[in-house]
Length: 103
Image 1 (cartoon, rainbow, N blue to C red):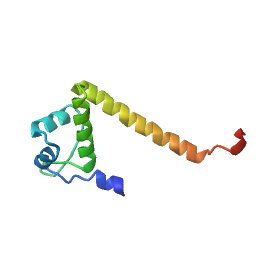
Image 2 (spheres, helix red, strand yellow):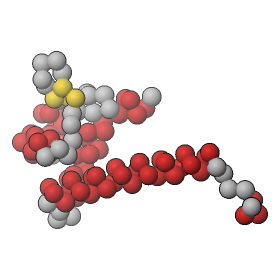
Image 3 (cartoon, rainbow, N blue to C red):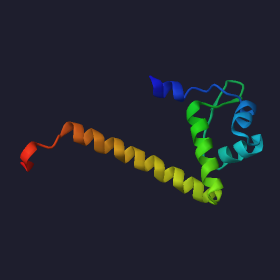
Image 4 (cartoon, rainbow, N blue to C red):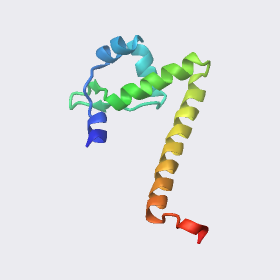
């Protein structure tokens, strides 16, 4: 349930820009580059979720570290892949717990 709440669009782009201390044009650029995809209202207005804010914060961190947008995109992709693989590993461990004694 918490994951669904994190993905619910709550914030307009102007609010997000103010919260993160960045410009609306930067946020639109990140969207055009495929770094995030906010939900849209029926009228086409962007609505950003808590998950989107986390992605935007991560983008800012990576840019501050000197990456360009192509590098940021690759890091975000790899981080998502890593998280997906970790979930798969945890599910596999849950289904097949190790038995004591190595047998």
